[in-house]
Length: 521
Image (cartoon, rainbow, N blue to C red; front, side):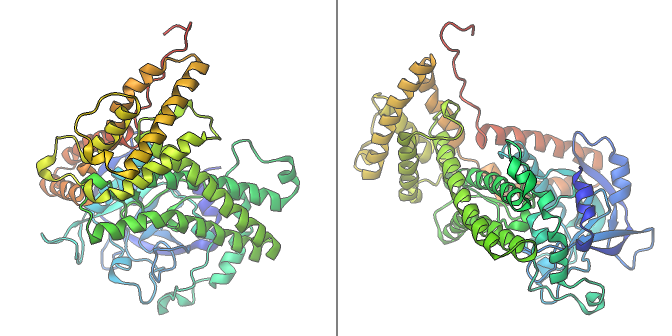
């Protein structure tokens, strides 16, 4: 069953509104989208009542979750039955009291491109992917006001993506107060949620091993198993972002029912080598650390709604406790492996479900060492191109743990946390040798490549900084906005380069495991 059909099936969440056809150019298109002209014709619309031209009915999507202010869902998106168009203009879900940023309905061209780039990068690297952008249309309209720019107004864009069902589609919007002209047209929020909750079990993901026989007979069990699978997926997604220092600014309205993430305008890369450890960075880093708990709480909210509107109170207690336990188990396990990849450890050698205790100790010690030395990890522009403090820290750990002489590491040897991490790393090297021997693998080949593998994953990445990316995108659009074919080619080149970098750095290039003895190379 397609995602577009699933979204159409939630009729209680869809609110019709009209938009007018506008002139635009196609500047971004997914490689597999062969229907570019049809997409362009279907999606080139804005909510501009004074504009002459063809009128088309779109639907706004009602949903809850965090980050939507006092709105009733997606307040600047329109769904036409096949595509979701972001930036179409303010729709009936703009609530009374929402600030300008959440009520103007506009999407700047640089915002759309920034989001599309990150959607491609994360679709290729996250364990369960991200919602991809089908297309970006550059309109001839301009934003009405913009407190984030100093050079003047920006071209408006329309971002076209696949329509997806989110956990938030099944949640209340308790702070939404519709504007007077729409108040009588909208179903009461409690009735809406109660109605759509009946279909929630069908939207939950299927576990890797399939549903159990008991689940086939018991709707409660089926819901629990589906919730456990969604919980596992989201825990691993959040762990990936935590260990790559990616702050998503996420909530249940920015994730899908199959575990993908979406909406990347709030994404910020907080890699420590690229940021001074100042007050602003500390605030953002604290937000990064809170994000997993936000998602876990959202899952608990979903359990609450299931129990309240579909089952009963005992279901709520069981589901919330199990979801919480599952989430933190899978999150901590995935975080452990994520930090190990930063140290060049080949996690392909590990069991899919169990992490040996020496590796858990190393990951925990390394995290504490990172936190302890975070003030010393920034790489200034003058240092660019040299070995970063973080690279030096980890490479020194690797070489010392393997018994290689390392010059001038007195600063580290006086650090109790460094020495504790080094002892843990030495134990992991013993584990690595024993494991490789048992599997018929030459451990020395792996050990020789660990430092280089760690460098790939720990190198500074200023090109992923939000301000730098937006500045580069803005310059491209301003210089080439009148030549849509050239702009499209330049953005394609930018996308290819960004995805290649993300695969190598975020996902890493898997350490080549040498052939087992007596096997052909």
